[in-house]
Length: 337
Length: 109
Image (tube, rainbow over the protein chains, first blue to last red):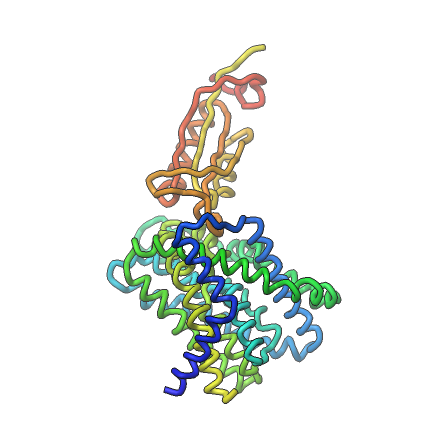
């Protein structure tokens, strides 16, 4: 019961932080058929600033910590890969077996839930910052380690399934998918940021621009995510109802998997309590911007209304609104913060 | 100035497969193409081009070529993509100047 009280307190705090509030505002605006819109070039720029910000801070921290910092990252990176793959396999054993759910739709959905959302990570980092819980600055650099294996696992499993059914399941070119992911708008900014932070001295531009402005850009992205969530929700309700159940439950289950493995890393390599909470939030998050085109290309027969509806429509609001306060509450209890 | 008969292929499909479509038509001998973003409505509902990540965006690809190449492009695009992606393809009769640009002198069209 104590945890419920802690969760409710954190939930109210999360409602008051601007991230969730802006997200809900976007959803309401779309629901009321407002003409409010954020041009594509603006939110793409916002995504660039945000990923460059977390890339730079990761890179600078790894540089400061030196070899030890890189070593500390190894196990969490490996755990992230396991989580990315494991979440998709879990989806193929649960969601894909439910009545009325097509196998390739289910795998596409599980692929997006295994993949990662930068906006959720940032919202989680802000929550921890405000709660005064510290975490390793390289935590967001775990993003690609979970994201890419999840998308690849989903695409490989779906094509194996189609081939087994006698359809024209194409030979999956894994390296081509890895390249496509790395070349994507978001990951290029993130990896570029890590390298710039690692190899150059971007402290001044980081402090003067990226760190100073990212809250503003995040608020814009949250409005866009809210508008998108409402639009995708309408499509979701046209598909099997199981997707609604999956989209609500999966982020919570995935978060607990992340928390469990993060707890292991806490004991083995000293991952900080804040780091464990962040790993749970990353595992709970689902891809909303960069994952869908990769899935559309890799599993063409899957219905976008199902997987985008589940992911952008419900998964993101659940991850930000419920999972962030939930895992902060769990972390506070477990570590006695 | 002399005008020559040629075929124009128009492909309207999902922008997310732009690279694959371009690769296919180039391999089949398209001498060039014009691509633009479009919106509209079809069997799969309104494709307004709003939203993240290209998924709900459409594009229109035009190719002018000789009849043989044009028909091959139209058939291959339909076969390759339209089971899984929204799309239509059709041919137009057009007249062009500078026939060599479109591979017209090489065939009997």
